[in-house]
Image (cartoon, one colour):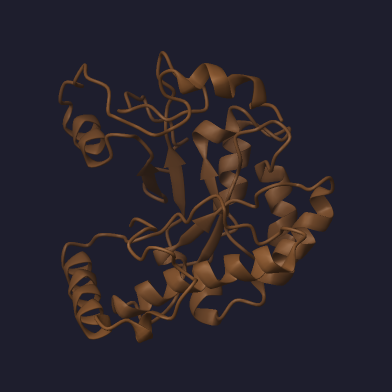
Length: 260
């Protein structure tokens, strides 16, 4: 689900909104529909959410925003919080010391309410100096947060692990009884390598784990990409309009900063 379903999430108490009762009813109905159609509802909050930052004000703002996501899932009728309805984020910057950052992240994670904390996951990054699955295994040791493996990100931040090693290590951090989620995306000609394509073409190699994981496709065309991939439909030639900095003229401007 989109994280902008509530604009300025975390900066206000939704219960104080004049439309709160209507919002509750709409979210409860949406949750019933999702369960009726066996849809798995998850969130991926903004990259501005940084639990490991060195500034307390930013940490608290991040906590507030994450709690807002959990509140939406509660209102949708997901009464037992778990990573089945994951709220997935990245660690964020390293601030010159990865270990200290992960320790701050773990401490902030433990400040979350159970409704939020039990839904949290963390994802590997796509920059060489950022957080690989190898790094995130240390974060998992510190606080127990499950790891979402992103195949595309691994290509840029391997962490001295093969793709299969990183995949299997990540899904092993998930609690028993809940199918781990992995992310699949691809590059597209004309964009910086890290940027997501409009559609995916595959092939999708899950190393024999097809029956054990749920795959989230990250593509600009969203559901259209899924339908084309699943049903073998032709991929349209027209690009999807995007604000992604990896698209069009912005790509050249962004390229010098990719390894920072």
